[in-house]
Image (cartoon, rainbow, N blue to C red; front, side, top):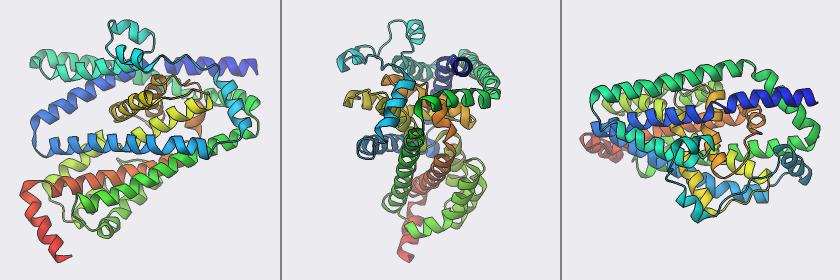
Length: 385
């Protein structure tokens, strides 16, 4: 068992060493791209503003739902005790005022060395916005530099993930020896929370289509069903793009809207990113006995919303760590159990991908309804329904 612990620990440390540079580089480049698109104006700018609002909404819904489920639908005490033992001692969480003072890093290098993820992400966001305000030559050079850092980290992560079966097996073996049969209850609890919140987000998208998109939810649901089926079976928003485009045609959305919003949504927008990041962070805090205050939840909400910048275009295993570690670290939760949560992530990811695709299509409907050139057409269609 000690050998398994050594193997699992080395594998996890190899993965953890990439988190800070990977997240920093991805947030800088993602924010720079988003800022440039917003400056360009038009449909893309409206779409990005809607994406941000939906991400914040997803994070708030998750933050409101998960804590009651953790307390009301709690795993067996044996599972909690064993998971806490496997996760180690809970770190000290500073008071809220001290946390606010630490939001602005006086030394970015020290913040990175200390895994101070919140000030680091804040600095990365500001740096990404600043890149759009400098000369074209310098901007392109810095943009390529951070892209290169991100790509290099992804190569390293790819190497580490080659050994994922061995590393996850070793960690699961060690955890299983400590957890016993109660481990299944804890993991089923985690899966159930993910599915419940994802289903609620899907329902909210239908309400959004009716309220802001000025479209019958039944009509939208019928058109979206093929894309949702592809999303469920492939766990890929990209693979669902062709049926989403076909659905947009059936919904008679303007091509100039759907042809821009849908690819942009697939590339930059995952409504489930805050869902999984917050659920993971709050679950890890719960099983570790960490009391999470409202201020920490607020910080986790913001980080969970920003985390979508870190998962764009990344493989599922990579994005799971890159997107979820920041929120967990921000509230002082240990991330050693992340590989175990990843091992049972397939079923929740099916539902989350359906939520992503549904949100992508709902966003296209809302942007089309709010685009001045097509408002009259939408209103005429409403009068015929």
